[in-house]
Length: 353
Image 1 (cartoon, rainbow, N blue to C red):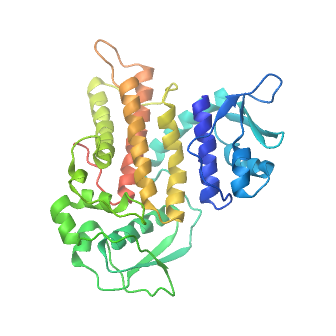
Image 2 (image 1 turned 90 degrees about the vertical axis):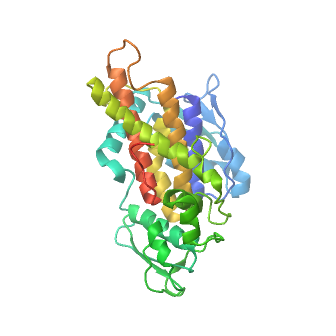
Image 3 (image 1 turned 30 degrees about the vertical axis):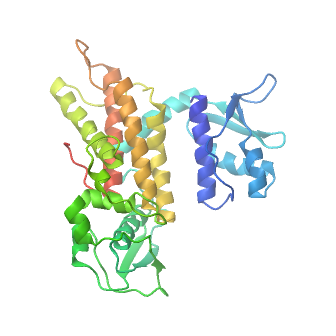
């Protein structure tokens, strides 16, 4: 685990504590981690708890304890101690970090599209309702799928007459359910009908345009969603998935398959894959499918970093090696997470683009 990895780990812990309503403070843009000074404890130290103590209205050591509970079990961290007024001190475990990355890739490949699904909400019934508007209908459907990843049962109803064109966007309109018995899903309206969006954008681009912005933001639904280039996040995500599937096909032609046999230097991609279960849980809890969309963009960019710097396929006269098999396994894991996330948004993940 590098200092940059550790910084991202602590930042994720802050974000998780805020999402769980345990810590009430603004999430900083970055967290600074430094080498422990001579005579200090551990390998690295971080003062973020002191930074957050004031806004959180808590003692710095209490903030540090909240964060320690959320990073102590992270692979690659051997020990976390609180020193002084509230410094977090980290001792790394390099061997555990390597083993954890291998286990992560194995878990993704083993669990497939259901990687990251949990049963923490098993048996609980969530009742949702939405107004008779296309973005609300699509949003409610995506929230229902996300709640399902946590084991919940979901009933969704519309408080008005359903539009028959919603079905073409994957919406199953249920009977009316009053606000007294269910949670209302009401994003900023789309200012267009389902038929208009389908005619202009098609199903996948329309869904991405409706779900990618946060519910409180207006949904941009213009021609930018149809651009066939990496500047278009939807294209980037689907292209990364298609490229991952192409790598598998090309490897088969070369006579080898993915297998994580040695560690791959791709910290951003490992971190993005490891974050996926937490992203699903947070998106379900906050009824925020936009969090999944943004996470898929992160996975896609990290995939292309791997693809460009550590090619999964042999180049030139190279023979397939353990390095290639391991990179391919990691790339395939990324493709699986991308496909699973797109499925939860109701968007197709084509094998070819």
